[in-house]
Length: 297
Image 1 (cartoon, rainbow, N blue to C red):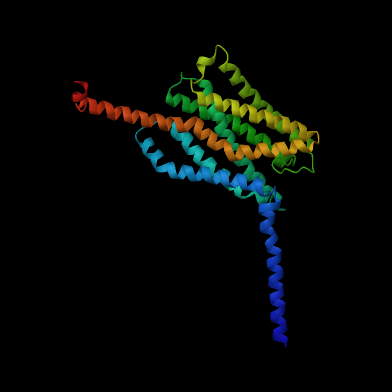
Image 2 (cartoon, rainbow, N blue to C red):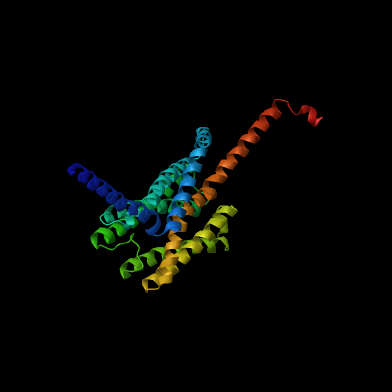
């Protein structure tokens, strides 16, 4: 009788334990920002990393034939940041879990800094035009980007760990004015830079920018995204609930779609140009070998 009672208590304990552990998964995927928020981040980031993986062999073969150093370096940075962003998307539960604040802030700090490094690097490369050589462009681009991102990390780290400002823990219940003022300044600077480049495209300095429609579309998209983020941060800082919803939407769009946009804008064209270069080279070799002599006659 005693053994039967113990077995029943153990089974009840296991059922209670399983019931207590079950809501944790639902809290992670359903209640922490909601299903669509987490699904959009995870699916989009995973699909992009999967696409990079399927194209990696083809990309490495092209790089082995000799490519620009800045393209190779940028491709490696894109891989690193994409994996880091995928981890950030999968670990959204940390933002809503007590005791994980430090880990979430560190992960968010490095993830956003990596994405900002790619963003600033592309802008620095754009503003150099076609004057600098490959090695000079690589040194200047990554040097300027590293300096700017280093200052950005230092400032955010001071706010996070020095003043205790929750920069990466978003909640509509707490309106931290210092936090939203910092984000307003951050988004204002980015919006001003993209607006200045748009002005250059419609001025006499247009020749200094690459003559690629994809770059112009990229600048327009990033200007609109940062302008919306700036507007939403201003509203949220004043306690508007719609502003917080709009800000979360811009964060989802940035982490889910910015890296694919960057790849399409900056790297995809170079890979296509390499294919055209090889086709023209093979055509020239065949023509020199006399394969098309009958056709010319």
